[in-house]
Image 1 (cartoon, rainbow, N blue to C red):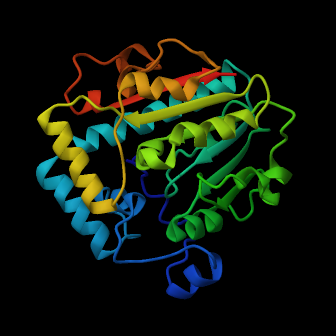
Image 2 (image 1 turned 120 degrees about the horizontal axis):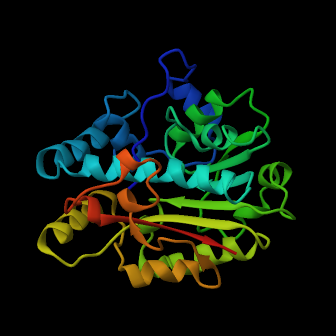
Length: 287
């Protein structure tokens, strides 16, 4: 599941017509009858960048899985903390955000630039609505780009716009926030993320958040809803998630629920977690 992406300011310039979509993303497939997880979350938070299929799936979450909102909130807050940690404690100023989703009020580039004004971010997504809105929002930002790309494409990092923005001789933070569980086993997400991490130099980082398989009735039913609606997706055990960090040093506290990953201030320290909160975990590794 994608992170919860709140709406940007109502003053932001966002394209709204079919012509905008066609002009902005010529090569991406767009089927309004197929729900998108990014647009579904836009609906859940009161946004307007969604379609009937997205709203139908969102209504299932609202009716049957109200704790899904906790998952989204925890995941988003964890991502913000992780970016701040990588930019601050680890000194990484380049970021590759995979499956970035619709723009929010606290994007990766905004968080990173609170630490370093030199931070550069390449967002990668395949959803046409995400791409067009992101490009409109960042049109005048020469340190941030939104790239049309499939993370399973072996040639993703050969895209000229990525190579022009990011310096592959210096550390890069690869972010896979709530995206790898959308890949089925036959798509080999371990190989996908390994290929990307092999392409970045020593000192680079990998942040992953992922749905966790607890093998209980409620979580199995929740996973089934996503699979049926989106036609894909696999939740994985902590041990399986740990394999994404093969060859890296896993930074403390390791792979834990997002709510428990380095809470920034004492008041953020979680008490007893709900079942839903235990379904989304995160980890950070350094090469």
